[in-house]
Length: 207
Ligand code: SAH
Image (cartoon, rainbow, N blue to C red; front, side, top):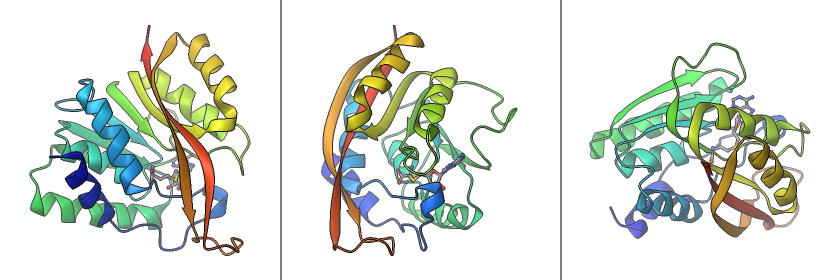
């Protein structure tokens, strides 16, 4: 599948009905998701790999990985109402494309004992810690425990902190892409139609 087609398929997915600010429910833009997944696949980290999508939301990252030929994706999402959208998104894509194995864990990612194995790659667009300070770092540290390669979105302003956490866990940055990330007018407190935040997607590998 080409990057353009991947982006097109991902743009058909349903997004959050009623996004919750407390859980920082912002969907990844389909074009951005397709770009970073495509690049990770070109580097050999997606096709045929076992992947975990942490804070999967409506599933754009994990579904993108499955469309690129991941052999197994585990989606982890805490919010039951979002899990039902996630299920229907996966089902729709699975009917049209022959997807690899996939499963959903409805849980807090930090609940002990939910993972019975490790993965080749963790993908995450986690809460940025705007609402729950430290949520971004907690997700990232979990990803570093679960896999030797991590694809993770963060606020660009937190770059120094993110890189120092990665270093302390023995990971180095092998790719980074900066985006102006469209926050569509999904939450009531937004007044302008579209706002942007600066977001960086890092690809980390254990050194
Ligand atoms: N990965 C999706 C969603 C990003 S929004 C995408 O890229 O579009 C962040 C998601 O993390 C939300 O769906 C939110 O409900 C979920 N989340 C927040 N805290 C969580 C936690 N502790 N455990 C599991 N999921 C969580």
